[in-house]
Length: 294
Image: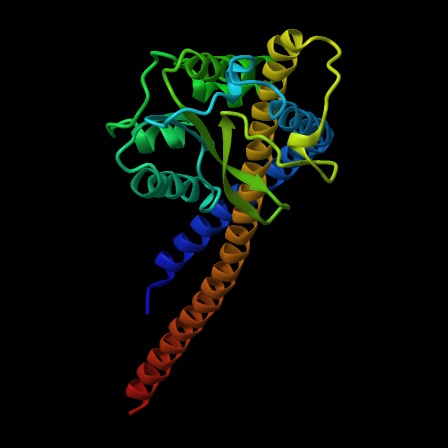
């Protein structure tokens, strides 16, 4: 059995850790509420805009719509979205594993460029041959989490769109954590470019839908489609941001519970050791007294 000093030191250490995890849980809970509010406000708009975009893409020729030009896939850009910080369970590891799976299975033999958003993704891929350079991407992707705004997200989205339009990449896929609820995040891979065409629009085959364009097709391609792609990308970043804080809050809640249980067990062990020490001292006193009397 450990001595009293060692147990006492462990109790102090566990108590300090418990205070830290409890504080981190409360901070993440506050940030999660704001992030979820932003996602709830953005999601209906982004979904409807994406639906309109998919429907319109089917009625435009490839020459008219540079973002729906499906060509032979040789160069693939995988946009990996993680957090800058850890202590959020398997939130980041699941995204990295899914990215490695896509590289080895679905895009084997292709020229894959991994575009990282978040320091954890950068740390995971910066020493691999797939890590994308700043040739067609910003170099400060990780800093977007310091101030997540639509304008900052546009910088990355525009670079990806320019890379696709200039045929530097033939496909852009985003791997991220979709926030289902506070405790559940699902890793998703979504094709950003080329724009996937909807098979049906309001129950009607997309090929049979006759559109009247207002404004003109040219204005839709130059204004609406880029805006829709940027909005989709920003919506994904908001989803990942909310998922990060949900995962961290859940992880810190479990860590606090585990620290509480461990603290309780250590205090019980401390009391047992203390009682054993007192018993030994009493036995020594009694034994000494009997020796004097004898």
